[in-house]
Image 1 (tube, helix red, strand yellow):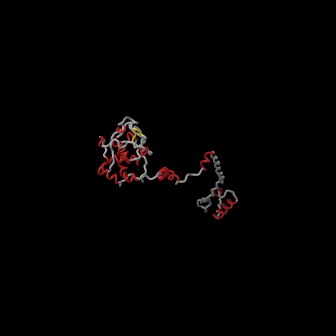
Image 2: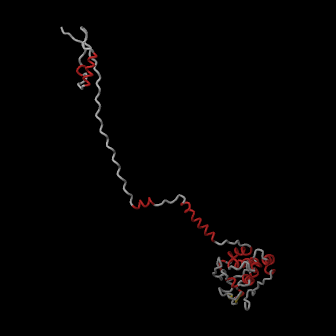
Length: 268
């Protein structure tokens, strides 16, 4: 008869722990051996103790990322462009306004233009429509003599002779000096090239229109002195002789506009 001795569980457990501490495999040998039971009873299998999993091996440290290569130096022209001073943001509006400023500055340097009124202003419109085709728009001359830059004043120092010549034209003075004597009738073109503008000679201008165009030729084109007594008497807006011609013509102002009134005076 076989006698089975039952080993207490606490001794088995202590044995397993001791073997595990010594590295002898823990409870592998005893885990499969069932604990003996009492006589006549089936043996009770021993409860295996959980084994502790082995720790994974340590990972090797990752290598540090390589530093990026240094940037290539800029070419000299790029470096110069980067180092160049930037244009301030306010500079563009200033540059854009420079043409306007230059225009305003140039206009400021121009002498103020005087507003022309009275007979001189009225005579300008008559000259443009009746006289400029021969004497030039600015009196520079053409078919007719030059009238600007003091020329007409040299030809007619006396305004009354100027009235008479425009009234009758140059036909009565063919071959004869008129005004100051510096010109001869018909010398520039045949006699009659300067037409008669007075109504008595078949012209289309009234006496006051002839006065106005003569005032423009003398003071608007030729630059006569607007402070002179002649201007104040005949060509100023409030000139008394201008008012007389307006109301009664040259006859009322005692101006001779006959065919010989513009002849050069002896010694004149």
